[in-house]
View: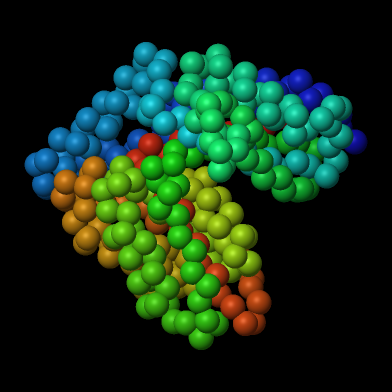
Length: 286
């Protein structure tokens, strides 16, 4: 049994909050640069260049990529051979509060969802998974609500075909239009229960763009089946001509990431969680 002090967790979460908000993920930046080189629409090309420059300035000047520093979502993978000396959840909360304060990041959390009131840094949202080993993996995802507001869930009949599911996902992006700051990264969760499909969709955003999904692997020409649905959806979404910041062009989305889980014989939940172009997350391991 390995003992990890709660203070170490607090300090790492604090660092990750700052890192995520100031440094755009390398895989996202690479995709933006690739899209910039391929985009033929002049206005879209200019916007992509501005987005890339914004990320560069944020990193070099140590300022937030976006004014909406999001509602902090913390994913915890805790090894079953770990004993946390102290209160795990309290340590994460203190870490988020410390990081947002040190990084001069905007507090956007309304403690009472109905009465609202003055926003602050806390509480954050915490998801905990028990995994093998003696380490703790922490990931901070600051989720801006311009894009979170465009989330969608549909409980399909188990007889639904792929074409129906694809239409729902594409229509969700079409409905978001320019409002969630495209180009988008589209997270999709298929299976489980209604709440778990939503979590899968958000977890899909943590996967590196173009990394393999959990869909079954089989050969389908040159393209494996675990890429095919993502590939087909990305192609259809980019035909919508929403484009960067909604001003036209073929770069409406940078990627579609799908995660799946077994579900009940009577249902087929599908959830969509959209991220704006500033998909921010940072990971550390203790």
